[in-house]
Length: 295
Image 1 (cartoon, rainbow, N blue to C red):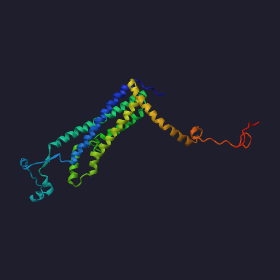
Image 2: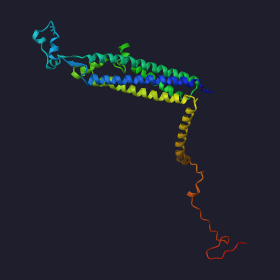
Image 3: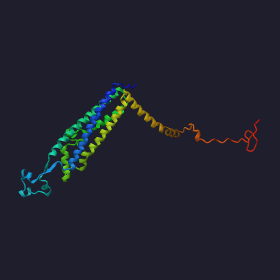
Image 4: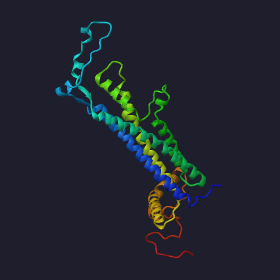
C-alpha cells in the first residue's frame, strides 16, 4: 500500500529544490565561462603581445649549437619564425590560466554537489511516497551522467583519452597554437571544437533539462499548506479542465466512431423529420376529400 505524503516533507523538498537550482546555475555559469575562454584563446590574440624595439633590447638572445652541423645551418631561420621573434605572452595569458583553473574547480564541485542533492531528494521522496518521484529519478540519472562528463578522468587515468567537459587551459592553448600555425602532427580542429565548445554546450543542455525535470517533480510532491498556494493550484487545474472540455466532444465523437458505437443520441436540429407512410386506407384523408372521422 502506498504511503501518504507527510506535511513535514514539503519544506525539505523546497529546501532541496533551492539548493539544486543554485548548483545548476553555478554549473551553467562555469560552462558558459569555459566556452568564453575558448573563444578568447582560439579566435583572438589577447594572450600575446608584440614587443617594441626598446623592449626587445632588454631581452637577451642565446644561440645553442647542436653537435652536428656548422653555425650557418643552426642560424637558419624561416621567415615565419623571424616574424614572431618579438611576440611573447602577455599578462592576460596568466589571468586566463588562473580563471580557467578556478572555473574547472567550481564546475566539478557544482556537478558533484548537484548529483548528491538530487539523490538525497530521491531518498526523501521515495520514503514519503510523494508523487512525481519518477521525474526526480530521471533527473538523478542525468546528474550522474553530467558528473562523469565534468570529471577530469584523464588526469587520474592517463590511458583514458576523454579529458572531461572542462579541458585544461594548457591543452587548449597548445592545441590552438599548433592548429593556427599549421604545425605538423597537430590535433584536428574537430577535437579542439569538441572539447572547447560542443561538450560544454551539451553539458549546458543537460543542466537545463535536469533543472526542469527536478522542479516539476518537486512541484507535484509539495503539499499545499497555505490558502494562496491552494488558490494558485486551483487556477491551474481549472485552466486544464477548460482546455480539456473544449477538446472533449470532438475527441469523444472520434473515439465512438472508431469503436463503432452508434448509440449516441443525435440532436433534433440535425435530424430531418421522417415522412409518414401512406397506408392507402381511410385513416388518412387525401387532398380534396372532406375530413371524416374513421369508424
